[in-house]
Image (cartoon, rainbow, N blue to C red):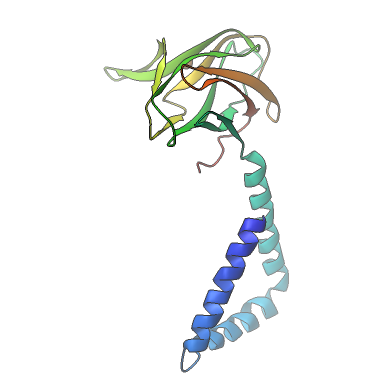
Length: 193
Ligand SMILES: [Cu+2]
């Protein structure tokens, strides 16, 4: 929130100083027209818009989560809610190795299912198939997206449904960086950053 406030203030001051340089001062004329028509005619609408912007920022920030181990950062781990009868689920995140060395994801652990596997999707002819991987390469200076229809952590034999709004711990074991336990948020896919 504070970051946004500073950015907005800078943008406002830049706009104001460039407006001062203008002769004739078109921007201030435009602004007074905007003030008359927007703020004068629809004051409530402007307040509602501002509230919406603030709320969406709070929500976006509320979802942002980062977990660091060594030079690796796991960003925004999330999982889709599952229906009560589902026997499998998946977790996704962004794995940032932009500062690191070559590494390898060896395994994942969670106590929400009988088995936890590393998976990817591959095209088999026209059909997209899931494939179990023994390990996942994490090259230096790269960011890898675990996402629907791509790499994911697979939970097979769920103990219970994954409920929207809840979280669960997931441990990722890396060859170089070691183990990191992240908190997976069950819900919709967070905005990519
Ligand atoms: Cu899978």
